[in-house]
Length: 477
Image 1 (cartoon, rainbow, N blue to C red):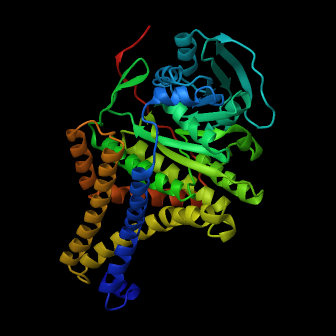
Image 2: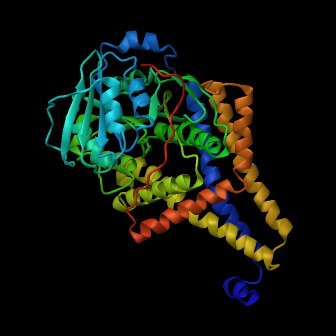
Image 3: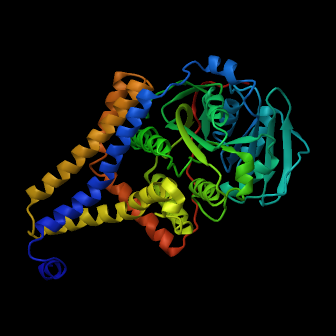
């Protein structure tokens, strides 16, 4: 073993190993520190209307028609609650379209029974391609509900079918295991009125595990009791409130989450809709919109606003979470590879340099370098080339920096948005911030490295997460 180590490293290995570990583990944390500073300053300076009813009175009549699109594949446990929440939006002009993407469970039957749906005809645009539609169902009312039953083609294909059947000038894409808060739609519509160059707006996605529902709405927001979804709550907080908010303010936001985002329908149709050839269809569409804006010399604004919230279920089983993270990593790499000619090119502005550049650092270089750094440091400590105390000191530095960043994000959320329910909940999040560095962070990077290998092998597997019914205090008839 010593011969192998000596073959690959020069005699004084302390400096190169130190540099590798710090460069891999701390570089991403340093980037997050900069983004936290930007997000904090912006949150303190920005003005927004805290009262949703006043906002509705002010822009309600001007707000354009919105079509909410909810693709559903084997979502029988959650689709009815999700649809109920969508039908209760504080918005004056919208419709709900659920796309049943060839489900093999009771998804379609539960929708038909719960909402007394009847077969109907629906106009459909032919500008986007998608798998054949088997039937269309409808329930009239102040908020029309449509269900498109089609042959399975994947999420991107289902969204294209929804766009083709939509009547709104804007569409809101949401997962069928997610719940929109009542003011989410009107708040997400506002940036399109404020700036006509806006093509997409992202809202906050929060973890629904641990919340209690009443009639399709979150009655009591709570944190998950199990560690795995709890630490994901912390990850979502960092990703949305910090990273995406800051990149949005810099004009370099490169992803609008597939769980919740609103789009200019005409601009999306112009660029060809969602691409079903990638599992990262949400990020790929945003990159394509940015590129189209630059190539056609049209201003293209992609925004993130923290106030509108979508609640989504996250995996509770380790195998489901591993599959999800590998798929996310593969989707990011597919997007980067497809648009590699725009990456780091000044001609594509901040989206090409900072936006795609940060994806290269976080999604390509970061996981590989960090896993290699930990493995090499452990191997050198085990063979006596560096001391265990040196290894422990480096590990403690990385953990401390990571904890401080997470604590800063929690503090920022509580000061500016007041979204955490109690001091107990803040304590739970701080506990997760401390514990995640001891195993979970390393495991996450291993999953991302596995996703990189999947990408290099050309894997196209999507996978499916097992869903559970929401915790509902009252089930309406």
